[in-house]
Every structure is written in C-alpha cells, then in structure tokens.
Image (cartoon, rainbow, N blue to C red; front, side, top):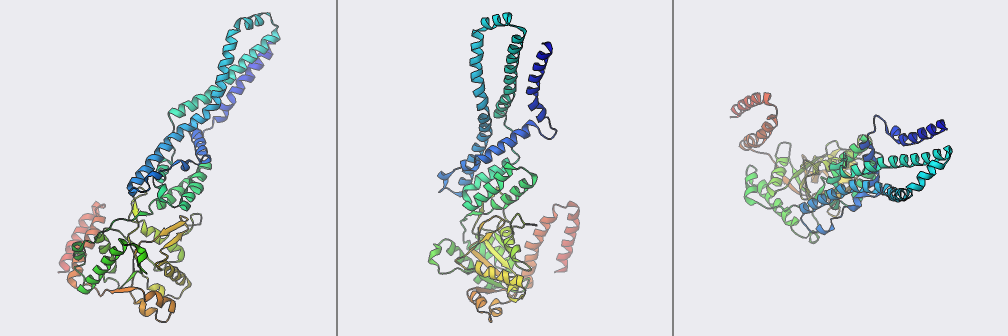
Length: 464
C-alpha cells in the first residue's frame, strides 16, 4: 500500500512538472513565448482594423497623422493587456467552481474526517490521491494564471512597436491596396511566422510607403526671390523661367479640370549650361523640393522598380527621387514637388530595346490624363508631381521629326534653351553655391578640412 501511495504522489508531481520541463529550452524564455502568442492574437483578430480616425478626415494632414498615431498607441497598449485578460478567462472559470467545491468541503469537514478514520487503507489512498490531484491541478492552473496577470501588468514590448505606430499614424492616408499589402502580406504574415527576414522586409517596405506624398503643400510665387536666384542667367532665359514658374503655380491653385492639357517643359542645353541648377533654384524659390531622375542607361525595372520578392529588389528611380528629401518615415511628404527627368533625349537616339521600352513607358507617363504609375515594389499607384521638367543635350523636336508618335509628344513640349553662363556667373556659382556645398560635406572629416581650405584659396587665386 505504501508503494502504491508513493507511486500516485510521484505521478501527480510529474504531471505538474511536465509543462515546466517542456518550457525549459535555452532559446525560449517566458517573455519570448508570450510575445509569440500576442502576435498570433493580433494577426488572428486583425489588429489594424481597430485603428479608425475617420473623424479627422477634413483636418490638416499633420493633425491626421497625430490622431492616427495616438489611436494606434492606444489600441496597441490595450491589446497587450487584452490578450492577457483573454487568456485568463479559462482559469477564472476553473477557480470559481473550485472555490465553491472548497467551501462545500469545509462545511462537511467533520464527515470527511470520520470517513478517513473509519475507512480502509485503500480508501485512504483514494482520498489522498483525490486531494493530491486537486492540489496539483490547482498549482498547475495557478502558474499560467499568475503569468497572465503578471504580463497584463508588465506587458513586454514588441520589437516592431515603432513600425506599428508609424504605420498606424499614416494608415488612413494610404490607399486601400497599399493598406492590404502592408497589413495582410507584411504585418500579419510576420506575426504568424516571425523571422528576421520578414521583419527586414517589413521595415524596408514601410520606409518607402510611409514617405510617399500625402498632401499638396501651399506654394508661393516669391518674385523677389525668383529674380534673385535667376539673376545670373541671360535675361531671355530668366524671363522664360519666371513665366514658367508663375504658370505652374497658377495651375496648382486652379481646378485642373478647366485645363485641356498640362505637359512638361523641355530644358535644352549642353552639360554645364545650368539646366539642373535652374530647376533646383526654381523649386527652392517656390518653396518645394526638386526630385531628379536620370534616364541614362536605365531599364524599365530601374525606373519603376521590381517586386520585393524578386532577387535584388529595387524601389525604382522615380520612387527614390520622390521620397529623397524625406529623412525618415516620420516625415510628411507632399505631392507638388518639381520632378526633373534628365537625359531624356537619350531615349530618342538609342536604338536598343531597353531604351525603346523606357521611352514607350515615359510617353504614357507624361500624358496629362495619366500622371501615375504602378509600383511593383509597393504594389500601389504612385502619383507624379504636377510640375515636370525634361532635360537633355539635344533638341528632341528635331530628333522626333521622322517619327509621328515621338513628334506628337515633342510638339506639345515648350522649350527653354540654355546657352551657358559668362565667366563672371560661373565664378559666382562656383564659390557661392558649389564650393560651400562641398565644404559642408568635408566638415565631417576634420583631418581633411585644413587641406580643403588651402586648396580652396589656391583655386580662388588661380581663377582671378
């Protein structure tokens, strides 16, 4: 009998300790295990459906972003505790009947005591086993219940917390297809099967998607500032550029539906004649950014990007240019930048299939009725800036003379011819703009600063 009693006790203890033994793995901690369960819970319950800030739809974009982030933070903090509460319910359902049974047993303690005194040895074993089993089950139940209570109070943070809040802040500003891609194919997929590769993919996609333009910035026509930045150009070029800037601002402030067409302008000139400099100065004077895309040697994949799942996935030159002036996904980007597409004339003179494909794509893209393209990298439509400048070294009006399709687009492009700066203007641009920009880049390399300053002095002397 004694051996049977010892066996029953050992069996009960082993039942209690099995979960602990199974959980005793060097790479798995209680925190990690809890986080994996929380992620599963958030995926299965479609966490991002909870983030709704529809009441801010008509507010300024920065107010919408703040509201989105606050709601994402509120829902995120709650779901960490909600999961612990959800997991505690089955244990509460166990303890309530246990308290009732315990109270009943206490009421009949005298009868139980008499039974123990008068019963046989086998009856003692049965009662002892029942009590041991009850205690074992209670202890085994109390451990996970206590853990859930603990995590309900001290919820561990998820490694992707900042990504959740950043996406929640701008979710309402993204189109439905992009939301579906980010949530179902990135977040929920990662939560169900966490891996460093999936997390890296999520970070890279969000870094581009949350830096897309979300609003139209109010631009201004500062005539004095525009006169200042264009004073080094020949008068006829400066006047033509001022007229261009003024017309672009009028277009952006007017209902676009009243315009029959809005085609880009073509900057024609040899390298070094100031085409890119003029575009950048105009953009800054108008209070916006210059996004630069170079077509030289580009394929369609280089321009529009490739799916993230493909080998050596790329976002594409257009997308990279549009988000280039934002430092992080926390910035709020705007639509009405100035887009400069450089080396455009090369598409007209190159006979290879790669250039023909890019030219065909660009002709469709520059149609005023179709100023967006599908990004396979983000799986969404990307809108182009309204103001587009094409630049090249050759006159595309002449290059397209024998091709009706090319001639049709070229004939719709106004043209500004850049013939270059005089020596005075070149020196001024070099020492007031180019050299200071270079000098700022050297400031991070203290040991090189002295040699750079000496070189700069020698250069000034040589150019006098």
